[in-house]
Length: 465
Ligand code: GLU
Image 1 (cartoon, rainbow, N blue to C red):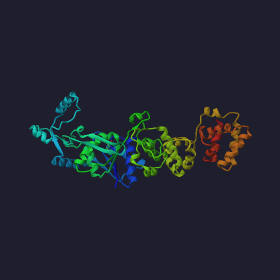
Image 2: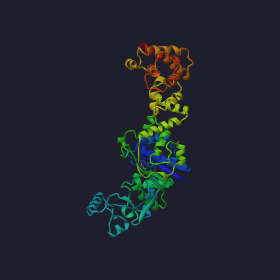
Image 3: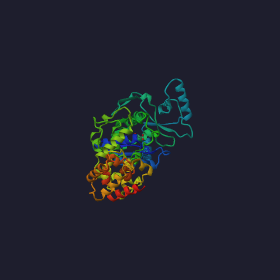
Image 4: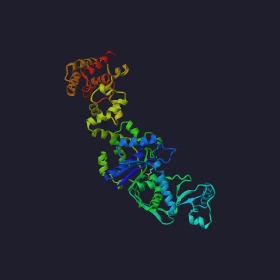
């Protein structure tokens, strides 16, 4: 049984890189009928907040990344970590080290002066301490160090990066418990991954350097390490590592901006992964196609134009009623009263080819739900003595018209011809009067969605200006 996990540190919102890691872990479990677990890595108490946990859960919820197990909170597992550490000391897999910070600094300085990489020298390994007859200093609390293998390599076949190998000689004996007994990061991850039965660790490649240490601890505890897949960094549009400088990077900001969950999943999936030439696909298709081997080891770049394009494609794919339902909250946020106008589904279908997000759609839908107030100057740009009689004539001609797009369209054409105008010479002032803007879809379709009397009174009101 495949078991994956997403293990965010709750120190901020769910950003794009984290969301993509979560998406890949989720999809891999789903694809293989496995389990997707959530672990909250909250041991950095100074920086972890309940608000950040909430924000991460909200982001996952919006993207539809439902977890099957958890959340497991590391802070609630302290007793477990302490028990494992005590057992490791008991079994000689770890040992107490009384080296002071000053001594460590001195050793580092010496090693660097000699042109070596700074590295703890294992002096408190029990056999070394015994050899040098070292005795623990009074009143000093020791750290606990993991006894890392001295020789050979630690290697794994990364599903993304291929074979990765580190010489054990490069790794010193990792501190797994601080003087106050609290366990350290790399150690907790291993105990959790073992206890949670994780088979596949899919995470950002900023963790690659932790992996050899984690593998060694895993093995020391008597378990074969999981499969690792380190996914590459997401770069900003400028090619720099994505960071707060890039602005909207919390996934919930994309929700607020009116991107569809389906488009966001599609977009995140394509950051470093591809399935042939398929560009537009649903979350279900993604799950069915997803494979770790197809992840590109090179960093991928964020691209707003692509996200906008995908969002429009997904808006076009969505069933009209569903798109209308998705639009409703954005109409509300734009200060519009949905009950004051047409079925949002009909509005959405009319506008979806012209906008990239639901927020843009709500803005563009303004005149369906509220009376536009074009300024006299704007109006004068389009309404003049030349076309005024035709505009008046249209308002009158609308009085007894079947209120359909076809009938309206035909009448607009015939009225324009009757007054010797080209269709735009009539349509533009009408757009300004009824919609307060010249940027609208086909006028007959727009008018058909607004009640006849509303249309007539807007025209009349404008003509009086
Ligand atoms: N908490 C780590 C992070 O947010 C993830 C650790 C892991 O996946 O092993 O980067």
